[in-house]
Length: 221
Image (cartoon, rainbow, N blue to C red; front, side):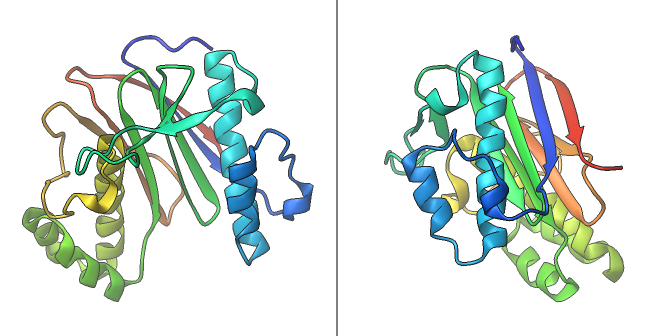
């Protein structure tokens, strides 16, 4: 698959209900295997292993490399300059982002800096408490919603914020209240992604011009 300029590809995948011993993990490197084995619960091992195998499979298809031969590094952190910014491929300029939560995995790839995030809608009390850390205008939007709608409103805003911060490479090293992500931001396009009910997902692309987004929904109907 060829990745053209301003072309963004996003995949949403379902984590299979299997044991970790059933997964083909042959493409993972030693560090990924170590991280996977560190999880106590097998469901967490399955989620991590499946997500990282899926990422390698997608990136291999886009770059023409074998999944097991892909090598990753970290860009410099925009906040402190340390080696813990957004993940990058060592052998390709292709940008990518990975997010997973519960039984959903989202992968994004683009020629520009990109971030994706998927979030489950939290309980009402949690949404109301965490909303206080958002930009004042975002917090107002959560508070203005009907109580039954506030978890979904918060999850949408939080997914957009996490996607943007991952695209920047700062993560939550940047104050969650610093940016209003209800619309696009200077130099960045933010898009909600159509995933399962009970989740919110978002894409952020560091491009000054609109992007064409190809969304691949690999989920049971």
